[in-house]
Image (cartoon, rainbow, N blue to C red):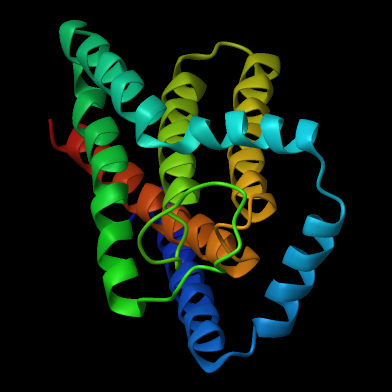
Length: 208
């Protein structure tokens, strides 16, 4: 097992423990005070302009943006012989995250807060937008990181992805369609999933 594989395994184990702990806390109602405290505070500081901005940001993690852009990225990877090896990783990371989110929502069946500033359907935990944004922008960042030739470029890539993902997660809480613990759970689940996908991709390349 390589150092990267050991690091991935550590991330996966820590992530699973963290997600399991959070899930137990959510199901037991232990996060209720924290969740509602944050939601109420944000609602008291809401404004029409900020709400408009948050609705735009939240779309960056919706299927309306993620699906068509993912298709374009996937087609680009597949059409380029030098980058075709990254095609399975990207498709698995993005599509798999969506399927995983649906499964987790079905398992936990947590109702949404119910006083959102935007329309949202389905269950609440973990946040689908947060998982999709993390998996999509995270996988793109992983690909660009590998192609970047300088540390400055790598930092810009990683920083941009982190800001986008955090912004989408915050927008879901601000709009009142998710609890903070939903977003945290989505980020943890996507971290585990991306780590598994990256490990799979490394193993696939090593086998060739």
